[in-house]
Length: 191
Image (cartoon, rainbow, N blue to C red; front, side, top):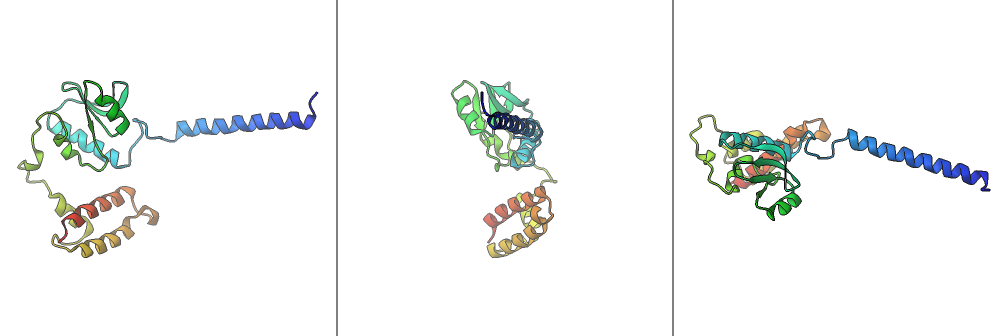
């Protein structure tokens, strides 16, 4: 017969193991893990909205959060057999199939998707739209500097603006991301 202290220790360790497993199972169900149905607040979420708008504007039928060749893709164009994904692994697996795969980075604006598609799409950047705002002008406006600002002025304005909108200082995460993207665009066009 086993000593009583050993039996109690075994029962306690089994109980702790079950408790830890239950915590992990509950955490996996309660916390989004980046699955397709998760709510996005990252660059992918914004790009999904932009791609959705772009595909609707050019008149392409699409299915969102679709499976192609056993891989989950963000968008699928059934008439053209084109899969659009943010996942590099899915892209390389689909590339071996007859379906045309398009890999989209989180930083790529949805408007540039047409450059990667295997068919002709209308050029929306040259469309005569009076409401269209030049992205460079918008970037300078977000930072609060004039269009002809120097790199050092853009950098100084960015640092000041980040202090206002940084999530660690009570700011909004989306506004912070917008300021970061504006800084990247403005510094590339600064004089």
